[in-house]
Length: 395
Image (tube, rainbow, N blue to C red):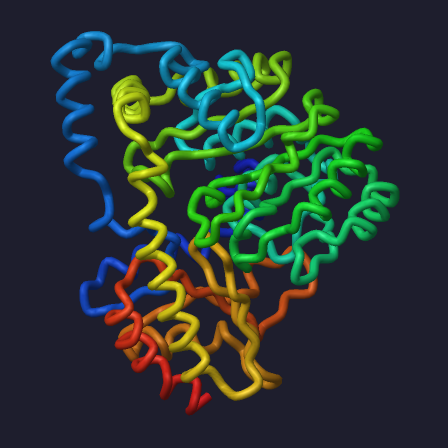
């Protein structure tokens, strides 16, 4: 008798589980020091401020907050998202914004709406694993774009578009996951020139840009008005307010957002009404940028501790990125090392990192690995890296 597994969607059976999520489950072991997941520091959440917003919403609009609501998002939250996007340098109206349950849902909805099986999607190599999952479930064919210390190489992008005629280009220009690399302004202009001249969608993921540790604000590529009919900018409150709220958004062409709304109706109906109203009230009642100042300062301190410690424990000749923001440091070990082979040795030593190979769509580099630096204090980071030192030394 034929196995029932043969009746599954072929793309569900071929797309693998995220290795980061698998390690995330292990990270609940209190004896482990984890550098694996991209979790914001729980102790820095504004619990008091969010409590006030929850209390206000339940006291003044409790019945509405507990009810079904619009698929596109509550008017207050759409307006708040449009304002935040405008402040990021991308002038936006509420009509150009659709609220999602975190930016990950936005990636899933965009892939469902834009991508057909066999369509080419150009991606950075390495790239964000869960985005690759989202596009892979729709049967996308991935093609890598050459990158360097400044992110996507414009000439390589132009050549790839001409060669592959992609349906979409997906990138994270600011504090990229997994590498932490940020694309300079001049290169963003060059990328905008290329996208404006070609027939392809730009999907720009921007969950980290407000976690910058310098005074320089990076303006999204999507800010270029020539891209208004072809660019989607994804953002979220997960990294700057709370991932538990599950509030994010897509900024894009209104006529395409209408089709994305249909896809959302089919798989989720709506984003939590309570979460949206609480988030909108919090943003109206608080200066989030001021709230983020001490968080950014602490994250910068934690980044510095990670970089200092890694230079001491990684094998001589290893290379590190030095991110100006975000959550991640990317390392490349010297010849002969395989980071995947060291993961479980690290866990036995009481700590963990994420090997780099799963982030690649082509030519994975087994020597690469990713460290998240925001979840642990410098003191805990020091202890975790001390546990790792013999793992690298004995490999």
